[in-house]
Length: 362
Image 1 (cartoon, one colour):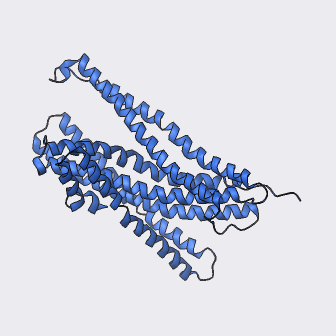
Image 2 (tube, one colour; image 1 turned 120 degrees about the horizontal axis):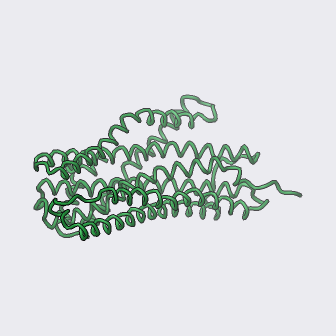
Image 3 (cartoon, helix red, strand yellow; image 1 turned 135 degrees about the vertical axis):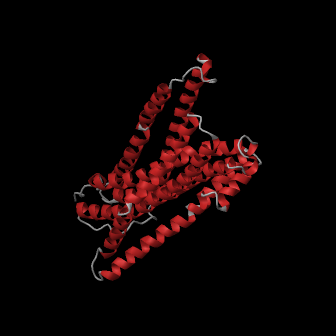
């Protein structure tokens, strides 16, 4: 993650170089970096999952749930470093806000240079901790998925040990899971966009009504902007929250009804497919959004340090566009996907009885 988000390394410098030729090439380069950055973390998660599962099996040979125990221990191990991870995560917003305070209080340029450097480090630490969140979420979701299969087996009185993707309903359920991840991310992005438009309109109105703001003779009304953002944040999250809860329940119940009495477990199988696809897609998309956002932000910081013409140059303007695109990616859609994949696993586990059909009457 550090390699793809720190401006000491080629990927971020490549985005800065692409900014020289315009806004579009900056966005293309940032997306390319984000897409490439998914390979290494995904591979590490896969290797870690297989390793802890196999080690558990070897340590408790003959015990049915030995592999799951190994995975559970690994998950606990990852979560045990949560204090360190929180410290790294909080570092970013603190330095970002310090930079804002320095700018608002008209401090000399060298002070802003220091906070900019700290902010760039903060972007990297935030990206690293988000990668950590994705890794722990992947392991936790594997455990919750196994728990879901056990729960369904218990309720139905027959074993559900594997899920066959060749069954059309299971495959369709999987497709629905992957689609939900993208739709959910889109809704989060739209929420940021609409809130930003409200803020921009408010700021323009304030400038128009109080021209003294520009020369410092009048004070702007900060409370209005804060109120707009806070209200929008609460209002806009209702729809994604409802979708995350309702779609898996609807999918499972519909396929349970379609399965009828000939396959009582069809609803549960479809939801298992839903979970598998949603988790895999969510992990990859979260890594992409988090890394691309951090890389765009640090490409702007790199240019502000004097590269490619520095502040005010055409490259800097293009980098600001990339940073604006990256902010909702790394601060809204990316982190919300960590919540989504855990939420889906938890909801389906709790509501497992809804997905098992009744016994047939002969």
